[in-house]
Amino acid sequence: MELQKWIDKGYQLVIDYAPKVLMAIVIWIVGTFIIKYLLKGIAKAMDKANYDISLRKFLLDLISWILKIVLIIVVLGTVGIETTSFAAIIAAAGLAIGLALQGSLANFAGGVLIMIFKPFKVGDYIEAQGEAGTVKEIDIFTTKLTTPDNKEIIIPNGSLSNGNITNFSTEDTRRVDLTFGVGYDSDIKRTKEVILSVIKRNNLILQEPAPAINVSELADSSINFFTRVWVKKEDFWEVHFYLIEQTKEALDAAGIDIPYPHSVEIQKEG
Image (cartoon, rainbow, N blue to C red; front, side, top):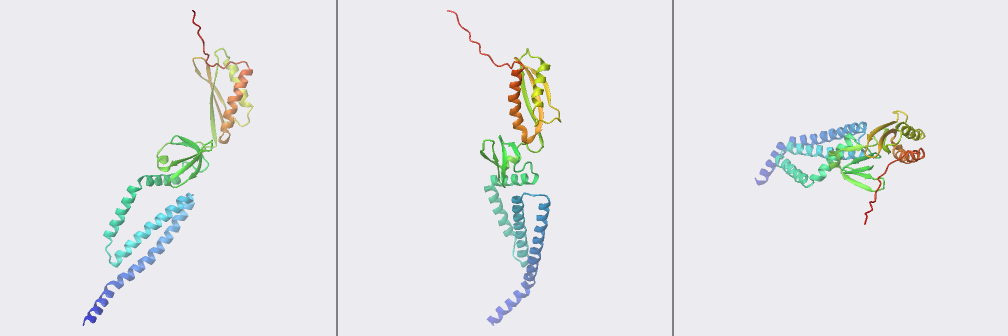
């Protein structure tokens, strides 16, 4: 009698749970198939949008795990297992991890934003967070810059994505702005001619937009000439230093005085 009782219970369990188990198996197979092709579609969309390869892999893995967890919860619910407490445990664990890794998550979110909106790319010269340099590497949590004197600067992506970024490499051309001061006895027209002659001797300086030389200020001890020329971005520093050196030599050769502070020594009597 006891054996028959257990057989009857087992038979009843099979009747009660067999359809649910079969349905769970079908849901698992179909769900896995859907997730597989959904990830392929997302990967193709990311390729067309030129997502960074590191961001692409990370997002695909993240989406894959999220979808699989949802599928597991659905399967367990289909079998008849209570999933409310299971979901609550996952939510609590996620909250605890989020609070513990708050700074890292902010940097991760910043890295995602940088890789999606691309305010700069590897090789660009940028200024951000009080630092300036060429972008060497964009990771998911940090961005690495190389300074002109070959130092490496690591900036967290959280603060980088929330601050101002100046990208000097976005446009093909840049403007070189310099101010030259000459004495009040100098002839304004002649001074302009001398500076312009220096500009014309350099083939790296673009003719369009045209160079501009204007009196910008009548200072305490000098007439200041604001000089603007346009160059290709890669020629910026070469032209910058050229103009400073060659303009000084040209003004000296033309007899145009460049004033400088004079210290006056007062000799006391007695």
